[in-house]
Image (cartoon, rainbow, N blue to C red; front, side):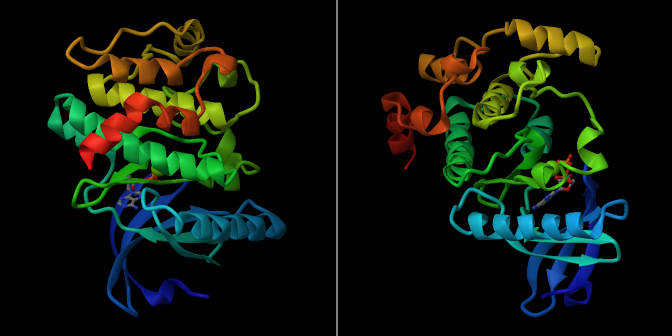
Amino acid sequence: MSSQSDFEFGPQLGRGSFGVVYQVIRKADGCACVCKQIQLSNMKRKAREEANKEVDLLRKVSHGCNYIVQYLGSFLEDDALHIIMEYCEKGDLSQYLKERQRSLEERAVWRFLLQIGMGLRWLHQNRILHRDIKTLNVFLKTNDDVRLGDLGVARVLSNTNFASTFVGTPYYLSPEICEEKPYNELSDVWAFGCVVYEMCTLRHPFEAKNQAALLIKILRGQFAPIDASYSDDLRTLIDGCMQRELVKRTKLAELLAKPAVISWASRLE
Ligand code: ADP
Ligand code: MG
């Protein structure tokens, strides 16, 4: 069982919807990690322990896949849940796209989408929903390898006040969630489609001035096509993810098993 004193706290990397993130060094071996601190002051003891247990599960699951941010440990201290994770030196995909100011080449889109897709497929195979797929939660290592982050933390906190506070604009909401239907594996797929779209266009498929207008657009499900220079394979993949009707949307395992997708994967090896 570790504690704050096992880590050297460095600069604050940012503040998210759930807590504050610091860069830390694990004193035992000098390993660079991040520590996410989530205040649980208004949570009952049992709920806190459950949150801690849930993170422990994430730790075990994350170790089975190379495209997921590795969870290294967690502990409860000072009324806060501390989650220690692998440090992703290049920050998040949202920032990366912003700094580039131009959309990615086809090849780079495939490389990222395959890695994100494999991370998400692994979670789904382990019956874990991500619930918060967005470019802000896709992290990059020095060699541009992807790590899907913030997995399931939304679920850990789903019984707290955090879940109800909508922070920012919900660009990645799927139509069924707009209609207050239950979140499911295909809701993650929709958000994944939004991320792929964003890599090609630097825009969200649905944008609006306010939340109500955004929900209407999402429910209509019409978005501008990606640039004609991209392949039909890519368009087909995005379409498969962004079907309004759940029965028409493609599960991740199915999506990654399509011949066109396999062919892109082999070309990138
Ligand atoms: P959000 O709630 O908006 O998803 P987070 O709490 O996940 O925000 O992250 C807050 C900040 O910390 C962001 O700027 C993010 O890029 C950074 N961050 C989070 N996790 C990592 C990590 N594993 N490696 C590097 N930076 C991270
Ligand atoms: Mg996040």
